[in-house]
Image (tube, rainbow, N blue to C red; front, side, top):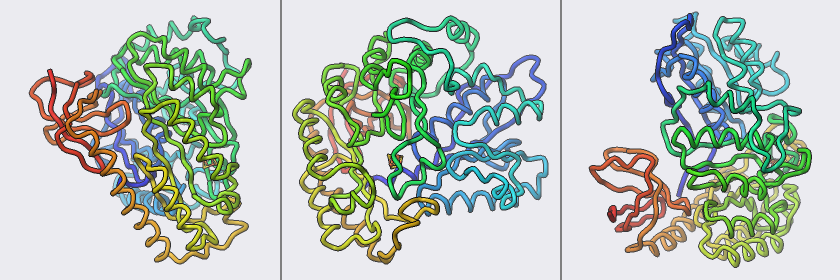
Length: 477
Ligand code: SF4
């Protein structure tokens, strides 16, 4: 059973270490990231830009001049890790007063004064995606964090909008030509396409910390992906808290299906993924587009969160179990090889044993490839925190979580065992402990050993061993 997504911790590696003539300030930076893929993508972008202007990634906190914490407070366990790390850095700063500490991500709310009071060791707090703050701080410190590099990735809301199929804006072509030293370390890149969320699910802190939905203009995204493909990227994952809302706030209202169609025309781009979907917003047009476009992988994240209508209503999810079932059946009918992942919360306030059993039955019925399960933890400021008592004891939450994990291990074992002896296409992302690893189009993690250089290549792998979490095979040449 994979760990819940928020437990992901990432140490950002350098894209391309180099020095740059005339750059008077050379920093060693360390970015600590916890949370969702959006955080990971933003950290990768900050790292990419710091590299591209001559700074270098440090290997630990203790040999860095600049530390950036990209935080998550979606669950108490994540927040505890953030607070622990801030405590550790306080000690480090006492020993090295010149250490610069920057904090971003969902810990940063609108009351930054209060956060500054609580964490005097921090030099700058900036909201997720608010790179103008970072730029202004960098300029004051004499750190050349260049605005032109950031503009292309996080456009202002009213920046030039390019209609579908009208090509790239001229200034972005120039930007691509100038920014010629940045090399990604992996063939896969995360591309934020929409920031924020308008949904206000009752348990969720995201809309309060990341604000309302703001889509990036389609032309900007095209430009960024073309640039990445020129530098060797083969696969992009489009990111948003709710990608199905993409474009509703843009002139002409392009949607995610339009964006997928446009991206599919980019030569050299091999695979496209996107996450996260919201069951109430996923359209038939999008499902048909995924079914039709060869480059779009057969994998969807479709968080259900609970298998009981009363709990879904209290969560303010905006759909019923009947609607969710219909959606899954439609997806499976139109895309027969689809692999599906879901998220589920156990121990939501008032969840009875019977209501929990409904979630369990749903998972037995739907047989998802992956289930991310989390125990409910109240987040101050949310609707659920204000209106409901957190009345499910932690032992009961743990027990329910274990039951779901146990069930999913069995389901995923069965699903993956069907791949035994079959050949799959793997895009190779790197090497771990002497073994190459990569993912299938259906997002299964595959390991294999081979003396060749497979980084960034598509390998045909014959599967020899399966487990609920990954597959092992050998190359068919
Ligand atoms: Fe949070 Fe709901 Fe928005 Fe997802 S859709 S980010 S759970 S408010």
